[in-house]
Image (tube, rainbow, N blue to C red; front, side):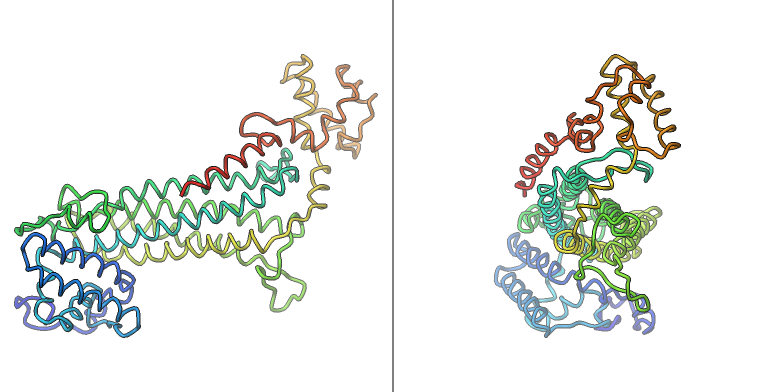
Length: 462
């Protein structure tokens, strides 16, 4: 199909070949072909339903479109740049199959509302798949957490040792992030699942179409109330890219922790061979490529969000060719998020081993129990701020003496404050430090076990 054949008799000559290539989107919007066919089948049914074409013609269009679908699936239909875009490619092949009736398919429709419909059908499907991947990711987090309720790991603020926490509690923090991602995508889908089909080029159509009929066929929840808005709206794409970016933030944060944990400085985890690579010149190396790639790919998704915002910020109503640039960013973001979720799920499930002896040692070699000493005094009537200052001095003198708090003798404790008794030693053991934090949402073992029950309940919701 040349440009001269595509456009009306308003044009006397074809596009320059280089401009035709520049203008074409078939190289990437072929991703939408099955969604385009599905939307076109609904449109054909509606044309017959409203009497705009006959039922026989509608059936011929529907069946012809299904043949195009099967030819594409079998690799027999592979349109090139001469088709310009997926919509013309499908229509051209349809007309070859069914004859002149194929030319009736585009009645009461524009590529503007057509591409908007295709993109929404695609994104709705992809959101469903990503949400399922999030559930798989969450399930692995819960599986590991259930085995590690009483495994302790240093907790950090400012990347400095702060207080020990349950490893399960740490992992469940990522479960909660993923839960918000899962819920956020559900909310985004409410704006995705609105049909622009029937908005025409920008002003609707003179034909007696039934937009709600096609919306129901395509399982849309509603239709756009304004045709100008319907063909030019990309809020749903921006929302999706924002949600995708937040998913990548969460995966990148976990990736950063895995990278640190696997380092020789931390030694909290060992990377299994199935999820690590080596160095081309340093034979001892085992590199955390999976989390590093996830961390790096996060920037791609951020970039697509920024690009979409920039595309939209200056567009007057209604459709503009700039909007052709929305698809590659959406497609790449979808593929990137799905690939990263899959990789991180596999890494957690099969690629990591926690080094339990190292973790057990790590929570005993610092002053992360200092707050518990202050709490100990506060529970015995010493104002917390006063207790805080007392313990600060103790930590300072202990560091100077090369001691930890657990190394102080009872006499030394009682010289600091007479409220100290022998039970101070139990109070500052790492296990008790964690167990005592039993406030709602805290790292105490009772709270963590309840959080795991709650998480399992949340996973049931599909």
